[in-house]
Amino acid sequence: MDKDHRLTPFYTKLKEYAESGTIQHDVPGHKLGQVPNDLKDYAGITMFKLDANAPRGLDNLNRPTGVIKEAAELMADAFLAEKAYFLTGGTTMGILAMIMSTCRAKEKIILPRNVHKSAINALILSGAVPVFVKPYIDEELGIANHMNYDEVEEAILENPDAKAVFVINPTYFGVTSNLKKIVELAHEKEMMVLVDEAHGSHLPFSDMLPLSSMECGADMSSCSLHKTVGSLTQSSILITQGPRVDHIRLRSTINMIQSTSPSSLLLSSLDVARKNIYFEGPIQIPKLIEMARKTRAEINQIPGLMACDDQYFLDRHADDYDETKIIIKVSGMGLSGFDVYKELFDEHKIQLELAETQLILAVLSIGTQQKDLDALVVALKALSDKYMPMHLPALQPKIKYSYPEALTRPREAYHAPKKYVPMNQAVDEIAAESIMIYPPGIPIVIPGEIISQEILDDLDFYQRSGSVILSDTEGGYIKIIDKEYWEKWSELYENE
Ligand SMILES: Cc1ncc(COP(=O)(O)O)c(C=O)c1O
Image (cartoon, rainbow, N blue to C red; front, side):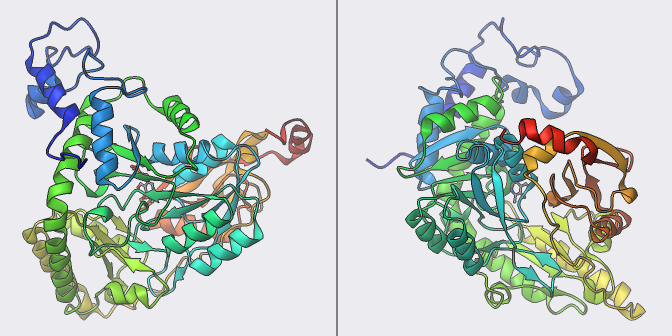
């Protein structure tokens, strides 16, 4: 029987509870807003009344049997999946759960090297062995993007013992690989297909967008509804289909890393976002894509700028392109993406999603309004009018994208005996932690990889460009493997 997507079982029950006048002798300690605080003064008491923990009737996220179960069934239906799990730790948590429940220590997983840091952390936690596929390098834009099917095929055929293939659908830049073909080959070889759909939660809701993970036949996917569908930040889902998923193992992994006090605000925001995208997506997404196309055409009239359309990516081995992402190459003005990102914020009050050396990225959703896009065009025109007459030399891509050589598994490097050295003295050492710029949070070096001078130069360049460099060690130091003790240690722990 068709599901009734007008229903919001969890949100409806939560609202009922908030209005019920129940005397609260449980947590949370703000007692549904009875403790005074500045946030309540600004955001209003309703937000606190909806921030309940686990009162009777509101079900339990660790083992849903009531309204969370009903809400999850509606979610699965909307996303064309068989089962959905609600997550309050973002797709970061979904990626951890997918990989940890699929791979044990020393089992192989095929994945692109430009994965989000959560996938690298999942390798540390599970002990899995990564088989990295080099992503397509777009020389024009100076970015690493999607995986070419041929490269994935080669990795699958060369590693028949791999347990899973991990695919990003779409990449941060909106590009998809041929996921359907990857799934067919992986399943033929008895491998699972796990999908990072952090940037693709809207895909199932319009046929003007690339195919979603479930439409392509993938086994599991995690989607950040908070990124493109409108739920609250940190709320995501993990969806599954087919006979390969071991739900007992998956459930216990999720319960291991999920808080026992999941936010009811986040859960209810998933419930209502699903209802909205289910009805509004098919109507609003085509309009949004039209707005994005018009904006690209306007930007392409501005000297020094290039907004990439779908043909741009199709000409570069993309399977498809999500047109709700606007990528603008700005280096023709003689500025870096970082310069433009900063100036748009400082001078024009425009916050972009991301900057890279050559480009900026605007992420749209059905919440984007025409006036917001007009403001972007006006601001970019102002920048072009200011900088083009200066005839600054066009920037060349700085990053070479040769990935470091790995000497050991991320888990082994993470746990091995270690020492700390100043970053600039780490040449030829083996990293024991990840280093990345954020956004996008894609590690430049991961535990187990050799730190080359080229990597240090890249990091230095990013730092000088104003990017945020993230690593575990602070103060310009980096954690490396202490080679003196490593061999002895390995004898004891190498199989962990
Ligand atoms: C490609 C990719 N995967 C996963 C994530 C993690 O998603 P979340 O922020 O929902 O934890 C991100 C976040 O930026 C991402 O860009």
